[in-house]
Image 1 (cartoon, rainbow, N blue to C red):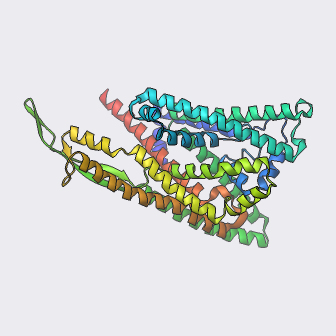
Image 2: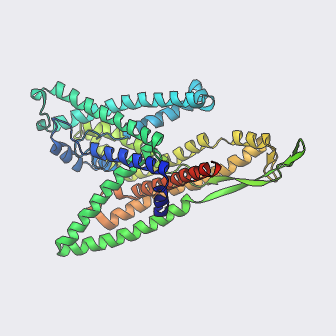
Image 3: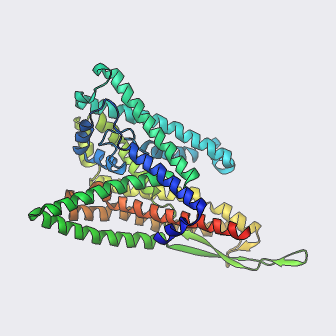
Length: 434
């Protein structure tokens, strides 16, 4: 990857895109540390530290929520909105038509619907946060003479504006930079929080004493787990099933075309970390609303204990949702009927399989088996190593550096490296043709 980055800086167009991406990510990190005027950051910090779930949300956003910052909501509303719109696109016939036949205009309309839903969700989350933290500590209201209505309205306005600004940053990174903007924003947030936790661990080691010895062993065991998870993620990410395709020879005029062999790559983990992100968002959204409105309610305490983050029920539901979203995403992105039709139109066939519907069924059966293995891998990575890391390092390492966080970091880094190589290859071909 470092070799790819060094090569990218030698190509002017790729270097400019890379620098624009870094600039937009830097702007995002600045926004994560800019507190909302009139808000006491200690109120947010105390509220987040006393709540494991809110601490997890804050760690994903790079500590923005615990700082009471302008970008405290991060990309959470947009991700939830994307899930809702994808589900509705599979149900509403007019939206299905936009996705399949709308082309660029259809994608643009779906993107607009997603932004509208994200705006509604951002308003709901912002109201919950403003009321919940404002009620917890009146000192957090320091503007408009302490008028609660005006203070709440101002805080909600700032949080919603920050959420939509984050969406805009993600789109700009995708449009003029390199890589998926939303994934890179999550990547930077987790990486920044995790690095702070490791630095705190080094501070404990530097302090000396009995705590330093414990911190050293925790760090060593954590690094071993880290290397093992990295190796496993990279190994599975590169795995694919290659379905051979043979093209028949065709005479066009005086020339003969075809007669070549190729393959269709069916990746083991074609969806990346999106099923984990989707499942986490679905599970955390109800707890967010309940936690910020009335954290002392008996039902909220029961939910946090038995169904909240860290519980066994949460782990089981998380695994099931990952499996469901992995299959759902694959069915949308890997259209076997369309692939079969394209192969047949180009005079190709899979050896031993009849063209048309049998080919679609054959590809579908392969895709289902591969997707099942990839989904089980994602569920395993989201749960088992996380529990192992918690048992090893205890509270010393933040929740962001769980196996899920590591999986997101590695997967996004690998995808970014692939897109960077594709950009370099495209520029090299362009220079060759000139």
